[in-house]
Length: 213
Ligand SMILES: CC(C)(COP(=O)(O)OP(=O)(O)OC[C@H]1O[C@@H](n2cnc3c(N)ncnc32)[C@H](O)[C@@H]1OP(=O)(O)O)[C@@H](O)C(=O)NCCC(=O)NCCS
Image (cartoon, rainbow, N blue to C red; front, side):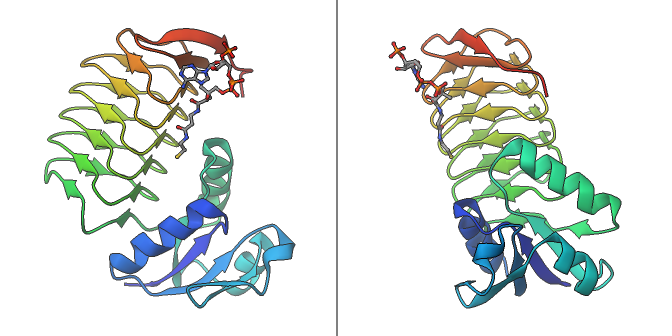
């Protein structure tokens, strides 16, 4: 197992680091483009610099990387930038989760404690499955999605690229969440959603549309 480097030193990074340690990784350093964090440590792991330092001193052939940024768009940009420069990415899977042997898990995926991923489900690259969420059989989760703590997805749900499903929200079987949606905390999705939509309530209704990225 190559030594792991973590990119991102915010709140989300802390849970990524603890999951990585629980999964048996050794973490050499943390990076962040906010220079004011340089010299700080988390669990004795030093924050050593930003993108420039990473590219100069930590070559892709010697290290594995994990992008630990909660914001979907920022995580996507950093993941794509560093992938283009030859880095490979870890999958951080907490030992207290259940992942079906028939599920597919992409690179730079975070799976937190208490998560269940059931049969034939596809979790694409750079997705966050946060604490205690459940993703049932034959779901397809597209890249750069964040599924917040306590979310439940029934069978055959599709979640489009970059969408965020807020804490405790639910999606009934066979529904399709569009791209770059925000699903509000506690919402229950009973119909397909429009791309770039923000939905809240039970049953969920469109609250507003976001600017396209
Ligand atoms: C949906 C959400 C993104 C809206 O944020 P926002 O655009 O800043 O909206 P506001 O807080 O200005 O609220 C606008 C209105 O929507 C209502 N509203 C906001 N979130 C709601 C929700 N989840 N369910 C129902 N109504 C909601 C507010 O009460 C307010 O109603 P009002 O105009 O009658 O007072 C946000 O409230 C939310 O639910 N975020 C999810 C947070 C989360 O899951 N965090 C976990 C991180 S791991």
